[in-house]
Length: 340
Ligand code: NAD
Ligand code: UD1
Image (cartoon, rainbow, N blue to C red; front, side):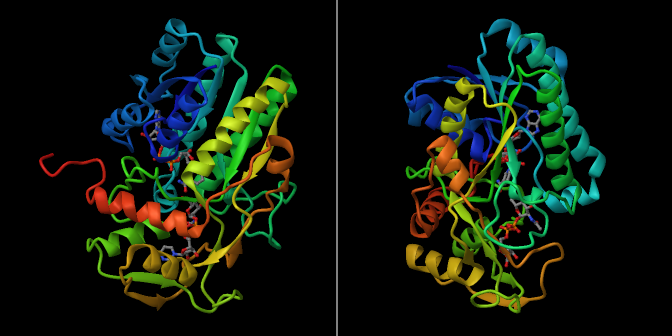
Protein backbone atom coordinates (compact mmCIF):
# COMPACT_ATOMS: atom_id res chain seq x y z
CA UNK A 1 0.00 0.00 0.00
CA UNK A 2 0.98 3.63 -0.46
CA UNK A 3 0.71 5.07 3.02
CA UNK A 4 0.72 8.76 3.89
CA UNK A 5 2.26 9.21 7.33
CA UNK A 6 1.51 12.59 8.92
CA UNK A 7 4.04 13.48 11.63
CA UNK A 8 6.33 10.76 10.26
CA UNK A 9 9.51 12.57 11.33
CA UNK A 10 8.52 12.36 15.00
CA UNK A 11 9.22 9.73 17.63
CA UNK A 12 6.49 7.14 16.97
CA UNK A 13 6.09 8.10 13.30
CA UNK A 14 9.74 7.47 12.42
CA UNK A 15 9.68 4.01 14.03
CA UNK A 16 6.43 3.22 12.24
CA UNK A 17 7.90 4.26 8.85
CA UNK A 18 10.56 1.57 9.28
CA UNK A 19 8.05 -1.15 10.17
CA UNK A 20 5.80 -0.12 7.26
CA UNK A 21 8.66 -0.29 4.78
CA UNK A 22 9.88 -3.61 6.08
CA UNK A 23 6.32 -4.95 5.61
CA UNK A 24 6.53 -3.87 1.96
CA UNK A 25 4.57 -0.62 2.04
CA UNK A 26 5.55 2.63 0.33
CA UNK A 27 5.79 5.58 2.69
CA UNK A 28 5.10 9.26 2.05
CA UNK A 29 5.72 11.58 5.00
CA UNK A 30 4.24 15.01 5.67
CA UNK A 31 5.58 16.84 8.69
CA UNK A 32 6.04 20.54 9.50
CA UNK A 33 9.08 19.69 11.67
CA UNK A 34 7.61 21.71 14.56
CA UNK A 35 8.73 18.99 16.99
CA UNK A 36 11.19 16.93 14.98
CA UNK A 37 14.41 17.05 13.02
CA UNK A 38 14.89 16.10 9.33
CA UNK A 39 17.84 13.95 10.45
CA UNK A 40 15.38 11.38 11.83
CA UNK A 41 14.08 10.63 8.33
CA UNK A 42 17.63 10.37 6.96
CA UNK A 43 18.27 7.70 9.57
CA UNK A 44 14.99 5.97 8.75
CA UNK A 45 16.23 5.71 5.18
CA UNK A 46 19.52 4.21 6.35
CA UNK A 47 17.73 1.64 8.51
CA UNK A 48 15.13 0.75 5.89
CA UNK A 49 17.58 0.81 2.97
CA UNK A 50 14.95 2.76 1.01
CA UNK A 51 14.19 6.40 0.42
CA UNK A 52 11.24 8.19 2.00
CA UNK A 53 9.27 10.75 0.05
CA UNK A 54 9.12 13.73 2.41
CA UNK A 55 7.05 16.91 2.21
CA UNK A 56 7.58 19.70 4.73
CA UNK A 57 3.90 20.52 5.01
CA UNK A 58 1.61 21.67 7.80
CA UNK A 59 -1.57 19.58 7.86
CA UNK A 60 -3.57 22.75 8.56
CA UNK A 61 -2.56 23.99 5.08
CA UNK A 62 -5.25 22.48 2.83
CA UNK A 63 -3.61 23.62 -0.44
CA UNK A 64 -0.19 22.19 0.41
CA UNK A 65 -1.77 18.95 1.61
CA UNK A 66 -3.93 18.71 -1.51
CA UNK A 67 -0.82 19.04 -3.65
CA UNK A 68 0.61 15.95 -1.94
CA UNK A 69 -2.56 13.97 -2.72
CA UNK A 70 -2.56 15.37 -6.27
CA UNK A 71 0.94 14.12 -7.05
CA UNK A 72 0.80 10.76 -5.24
CA UNK A 73 -1.58 7.83 -5.18
CA UNK A 74 -2.45 7.35 -1.51
CA UNK A 75 -4.32 4.29 -0.24
CA UNK A 76 -4.42 5.04 3.48
CA UNK A 77 -3.26 7.59 6.04
CA UNK A 78 -1.59 7.05 9.41
CA UNK A 79 -2.09 10.27 11.33
CA UNK A 80 0.51 11.07 14.00
CA UNK A 81 0.83 14.84 13.43
CA UNK A 82 -0.14 16.67 16.59
CA UNK A 83 1.13 18.56 19.60
CA UNK A 84 1.43 16.39 22.72
CA UNK A 85 2.70 18.27 25.79
CA UNK A 86 0.02 18.28 28.49
CA UNK A 87 1.34 21.33 30.43
CA UNK A 88 1.78 23.36 27.26
CA UNK A 89 -1.78 22.51 26.23
CA UNK A 90 -3.08 24.02 29.48
CA UNK A 91 -1.10 27.22 28.82
CA UNK A 92 -1.92 27.40 25.08
CA UNK A 93 -5.28 25.66 24.54
CA UNK A 94 -6.11 27.55 21.33
CA UNK A 95 -2.88 26.43 19.70
CA UNK A 96 -3.54 22.82 20.69
CA UNK A 97 -7.15 22.78 19.48
CA UNK A 98 -6.18 24.48 16.23
CA UNK A 99 -3.22 22.25 15.46
CA UNK A 100 -4.74 18.95 16.57
CA UNK A 101 -8.46 19.35 15.86
CA UNK A 102 -8.44 21.77 12.89
CA UNK A 103 -5.44 19.92 11.46
CA UNK A 104 -7.39 16.64 11.55
CA UNK A 105 -10.49 18.26 10.02
CA UNK A 106 -8.42 19.67 7.15
CA UNK A 107 -6.74 16.29 6.65
CA UNK A 108 -10.09 14.48 6.51
CA UNK A 109 -11.53 17.02 4.08
CA UNK A 110 -8.57 16.63 1.75
CA UNK A 111 -8.70 12.82 2.08
CA UNK A 112 -12.39 12.78 1.11
CA UNK A 113 -11.70 15.07 -1.86
CA UNK A 114 -9.28 12.44 -3.13
CA UNK A 115 -11.48 9.45 -2.27
CA UNK A 116 -9.30 8.22 0.61
CA UNK A 117 -11.31 7.05 3.64
CA UNK A 118 -8.92 4.70 5.44
CA UNK A 119 -7.29 6.32 8.47
CA UNK A 120 -5.30 5.16 11.50
CA UNK A 121 -5.31 7.80 14.22
CA UNK A 122 -2.93 8.27 17.19
CA UNK A 123 -5.17 8.49 20.20
CA UNK A 124 -4.06 8.06 23.79
CA UNK A 125 -4.95 6.27 27.00
CA UNK A 126 -5.47 9.80 28.34
CA UNK A 127 -9.03 9.57 26.88
CA UNK A 128 -9.91 7.24 29.79
CA UNK A 129 -9.36 10.13 32.26
CA UNK A 130 -9.22 8.78 35.81
CA UNK A 131 -10.30 5.16 35.26
CA UNK A 132 -12.53 3.53 37.87
CA UNK A 133 -10.45 0.34 37.77
CA UNK A 134 -7.61 -1.40 35.94
CA UNK A 135 -7.02 -3.03 33.50
CA UNK A 136 -8.82 -0.62 31.17
CA UNK A 137 -10.78 -1.96 28.23
CA UNK A 138 -12.06 -0.05 25.20
CA UNK A 139 -15.61 0.13 26.59
CA UNK A 140 -14.57 2.20 29.63
CA UNK A 141 -16.15 5.69 29.85
CA UNK A 142 -14.15 8.47 28.19
CA UNK A 143 -13.20 11.83 29.69
CA UNK A 144 -10.39 14.34 29.63
CA UNK A 145 -8.70 16.53 32.19
CA UNK A 146 -6.69 18.90 30.00
CA UNK A 147 -6.85 20.47 26.51
CA UNK A 148 -4.42 17.92 25.03
CA UNK A 149 -6.61 15.03 26.20
CA UNK A 150 -9.76 16.87 25.12
CA UNK A 151 -8.30 17.38 21.64
CA UNK A 152 -7.81 13.58 21.36
CA UNK A 153 -11.34 12.96 22.62
CA UNK A 154 -12.82 15.52 20.19
CA UNK A 155 -10.94 13.97 17.28
CA UNK A 156 -12.17 10.49 18.23
CA UNK A 157 -15.75 11.82 18.24
CA UNK A 158 -15.30 13.63 14.93
CA UNK A 159 -13.95 10.48 13.31
CA UNK A 160 -16.83 8.39 14.69
CA UNK A 161 -19.28 10.98 13.29
CA UNK A 162 -17.60 10.84 9.88
CA UNK A 163 -18.14 7.08 9.80
CA UNK A 164 -21.81 7.47 10.82
CA UNK A 165 -22.37 10.02 8.05
CA UNK A 166 -20.57 8.02 5.38
CA UNK A 167 -19.71 4.35 5.85
CA UNK A 168 -16.82 4.59 3.44
CA UNK A 169 -14.86 6.07 6.37
CA UNK A 170 -12.78 3.54 8.34
CA UNK A 171 -11.11 5.41 11.22
CA UNK A 172 -9.08 3.13 13.48
CA UNK A 173 -8.38 4.82 16.81
CA UNK A 174 -5.23 3.50 18.47
CA UNK A 175 -5.08 4.38 22.15
CA UNK A 176 -1.43 4.26 23.14
CA UNK A 177 -0.45 3.67 26.73
CA UNK A 178 3.12 4.87 27.58
CA UNK A 179 5.47 4.59 24.59
CA UNK A 180 9.17 4.25 25.51
CA UNK A 181 12.30 2.65 24.07
CA UNK A 182 13.92 3.13 20.70
CA UNK A 183 15.00 1.23 17.61
CA UNK A 184 17.62 -1.33 18.73
CA UNK A 185 20.23 0.29 16.44
CA UNK A 186 20.19 3.42 18.59
CA UNK A 187 19.93 5.52 15.43
CA UNK A 188 16.44 6.87 16.10
CA UNK A 189 14.60 7.54 19.34
CA UNK A 190 12.70 10.10 21.37
CA UNK A 191 14.22 13.59 21.24
CA UNK A 192 12.16 15.86 23.50
CA UNK A 193 12.50 19.64 23.39
CA UNK A 194 13.83 21.14 26.63
CA UNK A 195 13.43 19.41 29.97
CA UNK A 196 11.40 16.20 29.46
CA UNK A 197 7.98 15.89 31.12
CA UNK A 198 7.80 12.12 30.76
CA UNK A 199 9.49 9.58 32.98
CA UNK A 200 11.74 7.62 30.62
CA UNK A 201 13.43 10.55 28.82
CA UNK A 202 13.89 12.22 32.20
CA UNK A 203 15.64 9.11 33.54
CA UNK A 204 17.89 8.81 30.47
CA UNK A 205 18.91 12.47 30.80
CA UNK A 206 19.79 11.94 34.46
CA UNK A 207 21.84 8.90 33.43
CA UNK A 208 23.75 10.87 30.79
CA UNK A 209 24.43 13.67 33.31
CA UNK A 210 22.27 16.38 31.73
CA UNK A 211 19.89 16.44 34.70
CA UNK A 212 20.88 16.03 38.33
CA UNK A 213 18.18 13.85 39.78
CA UNK A 214 14.72 12.49 39.17
CA UNK A 215 11.75 13.69 41.19
CA UNK A 216 9.39 10.79 41.86
CA UNK A 217 5.89 12.27 41.93
CA UNK A 218 4.28 10.68 44.96
CA UNK A 219 5.06 7.71 47.21
CA UNK A 220 1.65 7.30 48.78
CA UNK A 221 -0.45 5.90 45.95
CA UNK A 222 -2.32 2.67 46.50
CA UNK A 223 0.16 0.70 44.39
CA UNK A 224 2.82 -1.96 44.91
CA UNK A 225 5.33 0.54 46.38
CA UNK A 226 3.41 3.83 46.55
CA UNK A 227 4.71 5.25 43.25
CA UNK A 228 2.53 5.57 40.13
CA UNK A 229 1.98 2.54 37.90
CA UNK A 230 1.86 2.75 34.09
CA UNK A 231 1.74 0.44 31.09
CA UNK A 232 5.03 1.16 29.29
CA UNK A 233 5.16 -0.15 25.74
CA UNK A 234 8.20 -0.46 23.47
CA UNK A 235 7.88 1.92 20.53
CA UNK A 236 8.78 -0.84 18.05
CA UNK A 237 5.91 -2.99 19.34
CA UNK A 238 3.69 0.07 19.01
CA UNK A 239 4.91 0.68 15.45
CA UNK A 240 4.10 -2.93 14.54
CA UNK A 241 0.59 -2.40 15.92
CA UNK A 242 0.12 0.26 13.23
CA UNK A 243 1.05 -2.20 10.50
CA UNK A 244 -1.57 -4.60 11.87
CA UNK A 245 -4.15 -1.80 12.00
CA UNK A 246 -3.38 -0.94 8.38
CA UNK A 247 -4.03 -4.55 7.38
CA UNK A 248 -7.33 -4.47 9.30
CA UNK A 249 -8.54 -1.60 7.10
CA UNK A 250 -9.05 -4.01 4.21
CA UNK A 251 -11.99 -5.50 6.18
CA UNK A 252 -13.73 -2.08 6.30
CA UNK A 253 -13.93 -2.18 10.11
CA UNK A 254 -15.63 1.22 10.48
CA UNK A 255 -14.80 3.40 13.49
CA UNK A 256 -13.13 1.19 16.06
CA UNK A 257 -10.75 1.79 18.97
CA UNK A 258 -7.94 -0.47 20.17
CA UNK A 259 -5.73 -0.24 23.23
CA UNK A 260 -2.03 -0.57 22.44
CA UNK A 261 -0.25 -1.47 25.64
CA UNK A 262 1.39 -4.53 27.15
CA UNK A 263 -1.28 -5.16 29.78
CA UNK A 264 1.38 -5.07 32.51
CA UNK A 265 1.92 -2.11 34.83
CA UNK A 266 5.26 -1.02 36.33
CA UNK A 267 5.74 1.47 39.14
CA UNK A 268 8.16 4.40 38.86
CA UNK A 269 10.51 2.64 41.28
CA UNK A 270 10.38 -0.57 39.24
CA UNK A 271 11.24 1.39 36.10
CA UNK A 272 14.18 3.03 37.88
CA UNK A 273 15.48 -0.39 38.98
CA UNK A 274 15.09 -1.87 35.49
CA UNK A 275 16.90 1.12 34.00
CA UNK A 276 19.74 0.83 36.51
CA UNK A 277 20.15 -2.86 35.61
CA UNK A 278 20.16 -2.09 31.88
CA UNK A 279 22.56 0.84 32.00
CA UNK A 280 24.75 0.03 35.01
CA UNK A 281 24.11 3.66 36.05
CA UNK A 282 22.65 4.86 39.31
CA UNK A 283 19.64 7.16 39.04
CA UNK A 284 19.58 9.55 41.98
CA UNK A 285 15.97 10.28 42.92
CA UNK A 286 13.87 11.91 45.61
CA UNK A 287 10.19 11.70 46.43
CA UNK A 288 8.17 14.87 45.93
CA UNK A 289 4.42 15.64 45.98
CA UNK A 290 2.07 13.97 43.55
CA UNK A 291 1.83 15.69 40.14
CA UNK A 292 -1.62 17.24 39.66
CA UNK A 293 -3.69 15.26 37.17
CA UNK A 294 -1.78 12.00 37.69
CA UNK A 295 -3.67 8.78 38.40
CA UNK A 296 -2.39 5.97 40.64
CA UNK A 297 -2.52 3.13 38.11
CA UNK A 298 -3.14 2.91 34.41
CA UNK A 299 -2.72 -0.23 32.34
CA UNK A 300 -4.49 -1.80 29.43
CA UNK A 301 -6.70 -4.75 28.81
CA UNK A 302 -5.10 -5.77 25.52
CA UNK A 303 -7.38 -8.67 24.60
CA UNK A 304 -9.37 -6.77 21.94
CA UNK A 305 -6.24 -5.84 19.94
CA UNK A 306 -5.06 -9.46 20.15
CA UNK A 307 -8.42 -10.83 19.05
CA UNK A 308 -9.09 -8.32 16.25
CA UNK A 309 -5.64 -7.31 15.03
CA UNK A 310 -3.65 -10.41 15.96
CA UNK A 311 -1.25 -8.04 17.70
CA UNK A 312 0.44 -8.41 21.05
CA UNK A 313 3.43 -6.52 22.47
CA UNK A 314 6.47 -8.76 22.77
CA UNK A 315 9.15 -6.59 24.37
CA UNK A 316 9.44 -6.32 28.14
CA UNK A 317 10.76 -3.67 30.51
CA UNK A 318 14.38 -4.84 30.15
CA UNK A 319 14.37 -4.25 26.39
CA UNK A 320 12.54 -0.95 26.83
CA UNK A 321 15.09 0.42 29.29
CA UNK A 322 18.07 -1.04 27.39
CA UNK A 323 16.99 0.54 24.11
CA UNK A 324 16.09 3.89 25.71
CA UNK A 325 19.56 4.00 27.21
CA UNK A 326 21.29 2.87 24.01
CA UNK A 327 19.64 5.72 22.07
CA UNK A 328 20.43 8.37 24.71
CA UNK A 329 23.99 7.15 25.19
CA UNK A 330 24.74 7.20 21.47
CA UNK A 331 22.97 10.53 20.91
CA UNK A 332 23.48 12.67 24.01
CA UNK A 333 22.01 15.68 22.17
CA UNK A 334 19.36 13.78 20.25
CA UNK A 335 19.32 14.58 16.54
CA UNK A 336 21.00 17.95 17.03
CA UNK A 337 24.73 17.80 16.39
CA UNK A 338 27.21 19.69 18.59
CA UNK A 339 28.00 22.14 15.75
CA UNK A 340 24.36 23.22 15.23
P1 NAD B 1 6.27 13.77 18.14
O1 NAD B 1 6.10 15.19 18.55
O2 NAD B 1 7.61 13.16 18.20
O3 NAD B 1 5.69 13.57 16.66
C1 NAD B 1 4.64 14.35 16.14
C2 NAD B 1 5.11 14.89 14.79
O4 NAD B 1 4.05 15.66 14.22
C3 NAD B 1 6.33 15.82 14.91
O5 NAD B 1 7.30 15.40 13.97
C4 NAD B 1 5.78 17.20 14.56
O6 NAD B 1 6.75 17.99 13.90
C5 NAD B 1 4.61 16.85 13.66
N1 NAD B 1 3.52 17.84 13.63
C6 NAD B 1 2.89 18.41 14.68
N2 NAD B 1 1.94 19.25 14.22
C7 NAD B 1 1.96 19.19 12.86
C8 NAD B 1 1.23 19.82 11.83
N3 NAD B 1 0.28 20.71 12.10
N4 NAD B 1 1.52 19.51 10.54
C9 NAD B 1 2.50 18.61 10.24
N5 NAD B 1 3.23 18.00 11.18
C10 NAD B 1 2.96 18.28 12.48
O7 NAD B 1 5.23 12.91 19.00
P2 NAD B 1 5.07 11.34 19.11
O8 NAD B 1 5.44 10.96 20.49
O9 NAD B 1 5.69 10.66 17.98
O10 NAD B 1 3.48 11.24 19.03
C11 NAD B 1 2.82 10.99 17.81
C12 NAD B 1 1.32 11.05 18.05
O11 NAD B 1 0.98 10.11 19.06
C13 NAD B 1 0.82 12.40 18.55
O12 NAD B 1 -0.43 12.68 17.95
C14 NAD B 1 0.66 12.18 20.04
O13 NAD B 1 -0.33 13.01 20.59
C15 NAD B 1 0.24 10.73 20.08
N6 NAD B 1 0.55 10.09 21.37
C16 NAD B 1 1.83 10.11 21.83
C17 NAD B 1 2.14 9.53 23.06
C18 NAD B 1 3.54 9.57 23.62
O14 NAD B 1 3.71 9.32 24.80
N7 NAD B 1 4.58 9.82 22.82
C19 NAD B 1 1.12 8.91 23.81
C20 NAD B 1 -0.17 8.88 23.30
C21 NAD B 1 -0.44 9.48 22.06
C1 UD1 C 1 1.65 11.69 30.44
C2 UD1 C 1 0.44 12.57 30.25
C3 UD1 C 1 -0.50 11.90 29.25
C4 UD1 C 1 0.24 11.65 27.94
C5 UD1 C 1 1.50 10.83 28.22
C6 UD1 C 1 2.35 10.66 26.99
C7 UD1 C 1 0.12 13.83 32.33
C8 UD1 C 1 -0.73 13.98 33.55
N1 UD1 C 1 -0.22 12.78 31.55
O1 UD1 C 1 1.21 10.43 30.91
O2 UD1 C 1 -1.63 12.72 29.01
O3 UD1 C 1 -0.59 10.96 27.02
O4 UD1 C 1 2.31 11.49 29.21
O5 UD1 C 1 2.91 11.87 26.57
O6 UD1 C 1 1.02 14.62 32.06
N2 UD1 C 1 6.91 10.58 36.84
C9 UD1 C 1 7.75 10.89 37.87
N3 UD1 C 1 8.73 11.81 37.64
C10 UD1 C 1 8.88 12.46 36.44
C11 UD1 C 1 8.00 12.13 35.39
C12 UD1 C 1 7.01 11.19 35.62
O7 UD1 C 1 7.65 10.34 38.96
O8 UD1 C 1 9.78 13.31 36.31
C13 UD1 C 1 5.88 9.54 37.05
C14 UD1 C 1 4.45 10.03 36.88
O9 UD1 C 1 3.93 10.52 38.07
C15 UD1 C 1 3.75 8.73 36.40
C16 UD1 C 1 4.86 8.00 35.62
O10 UD1 C 1 6.09 8.54 36.07
O11 UD1 C 1 3.40 7.94 37.50
C17 UD1 C 1 4.76 8.19 34.12
O12 UD1 C 1 4.68 9.58 33.83
P1 UD1 C 1 4.75 10.14 32.32
O13 UD1 C 1 5.87 9.51 31.60
O14 UD1 C 1 4.72 11.63 32.39
O15 UD1 C 1 3.41 9.58 31.67
P2 UD1 C 1 1.89 9.74 32.14
O16 UD1 C 1 1.75 10.62 33.31
O17 UD1 C 1 1.31 8.37 32.24
